[in-house]
Length: 439
Ligand SMILES: [Zn+2]
Image (tube, rainbow, N blue to C red; front, side, top):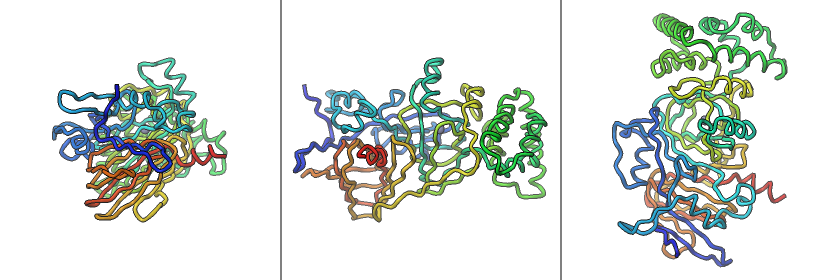
């Protein structure tokens, strides 16, 4: 029996290729760090997407668009009592050709990427994501904690100003921390702290890494009572000093983090990490084994399809300090900020160094049109703001409004005309992957 899907545009172009676009119903996560419904972008988009109400007081943290089983997206057929709902994943299994040959060959019958919207009110845990090899090992040893055998590179594209901690600070800054934050020295050995102070900028990774690893591991493994004492001392010192001088950005952040996670080692660990503030339209990407914590704001996030997180601070959840401290790369210095490459006046492309995904950001003024050329892999579109018409070669076209999430099959060209200013995001497999596979 044929599964007739609502809101599908299915046409054959002049080359008789099948083009296809279908609306998805998406899952939401109410993690406690999310913004309360009344000012959460995730809550607004979820309500529009699902046609339901949101609770103004409940936190809405993440909207998931993709096939991950912890938060699947759905394809809907029929209406009312005849409504049939199928996960996108099982629909793909029945229609594998929509993924395109190269994607099928490399990743099998699934989307290689997971697309999200995040609304962050309170810091997420200090975390890192394993590489493929470690992911497989962790999944085998602790399948209940590490549910996926896949790696999880990710990219966050700021929608509002967006704050994060990301990667270790440069050596010069780290030495300054050891000189100016006495509470760190309460939790690490003086010998190892001295080894850091004796490092030179030109020292290679093989010299720096074990020393930084030793100091960071001691800090993260310190006993609960010692940590509570050190954090309390730090906060009362900063409170006193704030009467006579302006606290640095990092110190102000640390005071905020302590209010969210009192007595947590993450409050002190923040001194070791780069504090990054993204402006709307700027993006940050994270490879395997890089420590990070998102702190505040709204962003669009894309990652390889996986949910593996190794946490070690700023969290009430399970901490795996040993795994985290042993997996990190301990690379130092500021992370690269992506500002995207303009494709035309309305669309900017963000290309992280991973095969699985890229993001296009489209801001289309009222009454304008733009097209997304056909690509050899699947895409997901999110209409974040506004209203317009999508017309992939169909005589009918498809009206789209904020909250709509659409799956586009490989080789489908999408053109859009806006009825009001439209903000739209597209994710798909990285253009570089298709280029490389042509060689
Ligand atoms: Zn992460």
